Every structure is written in structure tokens, then in C-alpha cells.
Length: 64
Image (cartoon, one colour):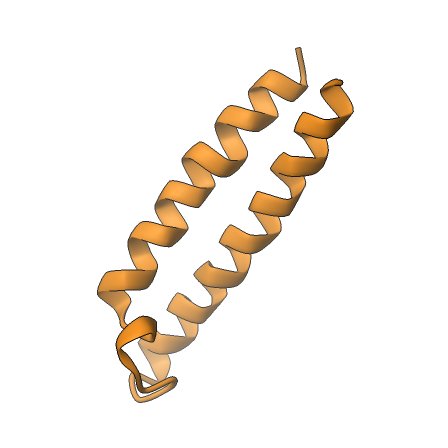
């Protein structure tokens, strides 16, 4: 059962890292990914919430 938590936490860690890499790239190239869904204001909450709720909290349950 705890393996499912660990697997889910790993998925959210990879996803949050990918969104963070997009955000980091947008600092150097602000015109990257024109569109409403790739703005900094939409991606930052996704990154921070996925890091905390998707990875950290689920990983703590999985390591119990």
C-alpha cells in the first residue's frame, strides 16, 4: 500500500520539476511558449502546489 504512495509522489515530483524547468527557461526567454496557459502567473502556482501537495505530503505518507 505504501508503495502506491511512493509511486504517486515520484510522479508528482517529476511533473513539478518539469514545470519548474519551463519556468526557469521562461526567465531567459520570456517569449517561449506564447499562449495563455504558459504564462508565469499560471505555471508558478502549479509548480508550488504540486511540489508541496503532490510530492511532499504524499511522500511523507509513503515513508511511514
